[in-house]
Length: 578
Image (cartoon, rainbow, N blue to C red):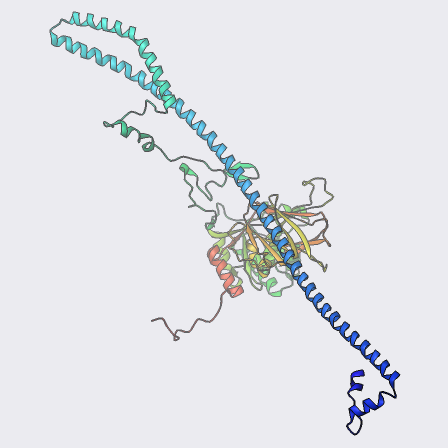
């Protein structure tokens, strides 16, 4: 650049000499160089402010972004505060309306009680006066007679004076009646009743405390209400309403005992298929029941073929031919014996669409939550059951209906399906989340978004529901478990609903895919958009025999089957509290 040329020197170090000597020779070149140098300086001076201006613009834009963020947060905070204020206002209005309604009801009740009390007080006052007037007249007559006798008058003169007194009383009686009416009016207006007589010489100040002293506990009556109907059928089962007090001494969850009023005559034996040991045990049990207990034996058609292929001795065994005979089994069978696991118990329960005979389940499966009896001691077990009494567990079932979107009304539905464990609604083979709208007695519960939903009985609480995070519930507890399957929300926790509710699960029209429902792991049905599944507690439970009692069998099953809370005991030789 030009400054470097001005400061340059010759090889001998005489920079000034070179400059002065070259100036006369190269005048035009130096003027051109100076021109370019000034131009370069001006450009340099102009570039620096531009760069500084860019820095200021960047800082200003960052400041604007900060202000915009602050304004956005303020707007969001304002909207949130307004929404919260609106919510609180809505709650306040609801609470005020409810309080006004309760106050209105209370005023009506108070007016009714006041009018009733006033009328009762008037009637009591009138009756008291009517009772006292003859007594007062008799008392005055007797006193007048004694006074005349003491004065020495004859009996005739006394009677004449008494008759004159009666005439005078008869003339004064209208005046007394008017006074009685005035007294009754005072009772009705002042709220003080003439029947509140002072006892044992009470003073007027003590009389003011009489209403508080004679107050009694209000009586009431409770009744069971289910779907708008009032019923007292469970009055003595769960809660007692006698004498206005609520007690829960006789609960329905008490241990239930079965005692035969007549000897059992017919036994149905159901077995697990494809098991040689079960087939051998079944043939042995059929022979023993026929020879020693003289019972009629029913088996499945499959088991009937297996027995006849083994020996023609089993010609006495009965079976059924079609579905119509299966529907009437409960009218013929007194007792059901299952040889297998929990799946065999489920299969036996599904055979009965109505009432179910008592089931004696023998454990020949894997876990055995519902099979407390051991096959090695089947003779002693069956002998004890047939002799009775025995403890049983009433295992509740769910009654499920599928209502299609094309149905004209809610009564146009498919055949009911009874399940002992659970009904599962899942997404099937679809890769989309299930979208299920859930209602409980026509009240919206939630919208399930996840892999699906499980509606389980308390007997099924140790099955699929437990694997999905549900709780273990005693089978004698009546209730419906509401357990989501892998929900797309961390706050979606399982519920336990009372047994009297009706749950409706519907696939909304904006669902991306249909849902699939399975009942105790079988009878899979597709639920398209608009279809609904309705579940409620079935009126026919499944009675299963207990080895000891229902609680003992339940605890044993979770200890042996799930190894519940199994760990090594803490060592006793560690540090201790002094």
